Image 1 (cartoon, rainbow, N blue to C red):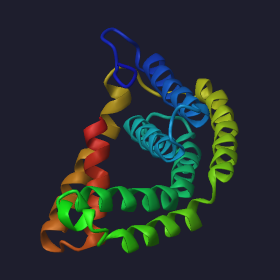
Image 2 (cartoon, one colour):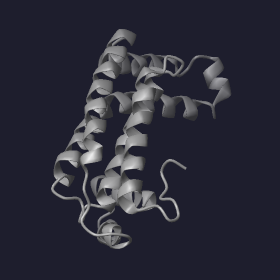
Image 3 (cartoon, one colour):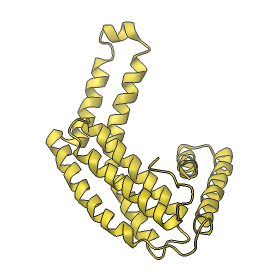
Length: 201
């Protein structure tokens, strides 16, 4: 329940609790040696997205901190994006070839998989590189955690979140209209992002 407002909990307290928990979990995942490094990066990116959704919920009430904090989590996520994409492509390939057991047994797809593994290695480096990146991310997140108690809200109760909720929903609706008229990759991707923010809300 770390990503839920609790009944009778004041909005500022909930904001700080939820935001800190997401950062704490991301730091834990950055150092969790039992977890595959690629999976850890995937989870950290998800924490960044959830944090940005939380910031958007209180955007209209967050005194002067939205731009700075949103940019931090956006840029952190972008730095991890290409690493995650390379791993996701490999995972998608493996799920696809499961439907062709005979061809897989004959290694028909092995050359393609070898190429995807090479691309992932070129993008992510070795295990030492991923560990070093995890340590860097952890330090940055520790600094981010220290800023969270300074987040101050204008307004109380539903008033503190209603503006962000309405704005996000409106942008998702507009994204749907654009996607219906122009269902291209970029437009659909933007709509998906808006819907995901609303889903988190």
